[in-house]
Length: 112
Image 1 (cartoon, rainbow, N blue to C red):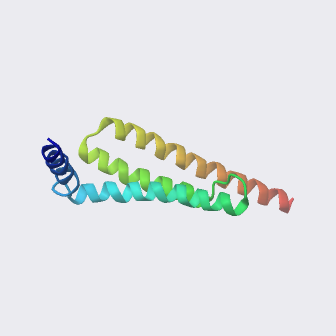
Image 2 (spheres, rainbow, N blue to C red; image 1 turned 90 degrees about the vertical axis):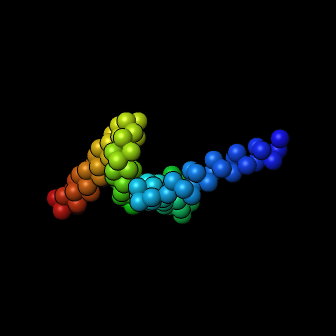
């Protein structure tokens, strides 16, 4: 019984992670890697500052990861990922606009 179970699990894992690998799966994995990198960047920046910090790179990794995952989702025709990543891109871009606006406001305040 355990041998049959291990063969079934092994066959499943091989079909998902080996036989199923193609260009689009690689695009999805690269997008997911960018998404993971943003958390690492945020964590390291927060540790360095000894408080919660969201650096600018976090938002760029977010947009890069979301764009690649959206492309992957469009190819796979996955409505859950399409909606989720599409909305995420808007939110991440909006955060970059707010950051740019705040920097511009600060620099104008220093000049005036």
